[in-house]
Amino acid sequence: MAESDSQIGYVTAVNPSRRELRVKTRNRYADRFENMAWIGLVLKDGESMRCRVESARFGDGSAIVALRPGVTRDNVARLKGAAVSDPGGSGGPPVGADLDELEGLRVETLDGTPLGDIATAFETKAHGVLEIDTPDGGKLLLPATKEVIDTIDLDSGKVVVRDIAPFAVYDDDDTPQREA
Image (tube, rainbow, N blue to C red; front, side, top):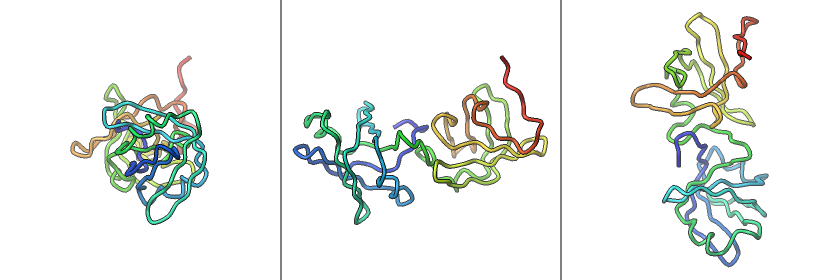
């Protein structure tokens, strides 16, 4: 699974005849399965799938997710070991990092422009949020979603973001204007 996807668990077992997946969830994301309409899956070979969810129930640290008809039983059989994401919510931190691991990392754009350092990172119902201390002393809020975060490199201490203009919230009225 790409680092910019939001992994919420992985498939530990499949029941092709019932189109069911047993998903070991990351604890902080267990509640996402209750109202999940779609599930994102990345197989071990890198193939991605997005499937409609018929129903989901949670218990004993795992979710049982029934897929809607339309997903072949052969495809269900291939899903054991697949990484699971919530494509509908796109929330949570990208794979490879929990939100608390991101605090203190520097943030830069794809072209290397520094945006500042992550002062704090927190979870909302919709997605994670990064609060960034900018070089000019201001604050910048960015969603911790795949639409914003390109890569996270904990070893080098940086987060690289895509175009933030549609998502950025600044703490003052001096918000940079998007070029037309």
